[in-house]
Image 1: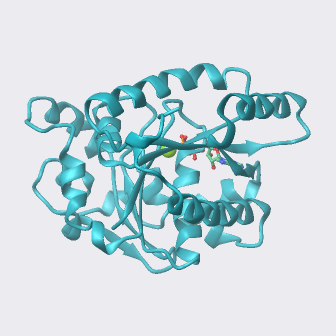
Image 2 (image 1 turned 45 degrees about the vertical axis):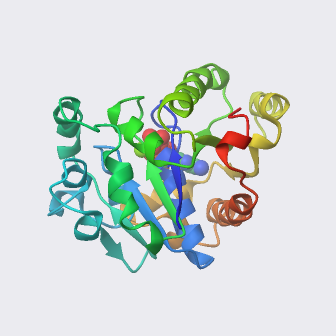
Length: 265
Ligand code: ADP
Ligand code: MG
């Protein structure tokens, strides 16, 4: 059965999409069957996986409104090695349309149940908000991966996300736990980043992943070629870090305890 993870942080531009597509590509390289779910109307994970969001016949929008199944709507790009349930601007409308519908926060969970046996990992790229879309992601997932930059305000933003996760855990999805914090766009030459990184480890202990993703221009260039950095330039420092992170995740899921046996944080 698939392990389902949200890549979430309510801030924009912190590296969620980069983490999603590169972790997916890294997991595919080590033989894992992966589905990426793009839950952001910007469709960056879709484009960054080589799928043209403007050409989608069916997308996550249709899945959330139950006019298509994931089997019908998913796309496969052999170059990246994983499947994608794509998104485009249409998804912004789903937010409004879902409000009046029943089971509005459990739509994605139900749709994923039909394909769970086909994958080892499902990675959900969340939008930069704590919206009904993100809630659908959190209600579907076993865990949350939080990419963060080691900046001064990083810890402050984190408490809102942690509170939301605690509430979802308590009220909607007892399986949910924080898997870990991933330090991204890291530059060890910046003293402040080192200090924040040390603070993170003091506060959150082994919830901070051992892998660290450096700031690396190849990761930023890759999306314009419709590829994750891991596929675009596997030898680059950024790609190597994500491949290491994929290996760490494979090991981490093996030791994962049920959420009710673990404090969420
Ligand atoms: P989010 O999905 O949280 O909005 P993105 O993954 O789109 O964030 O990243 C924001 C920007 O930063 C993008 O232009 C991306 O290419 C760039 N970026 C992300 N991670 C790195 C990295 N490790 N090194 C260099 N650039 C990065
Ligand atoms: Mg994004």
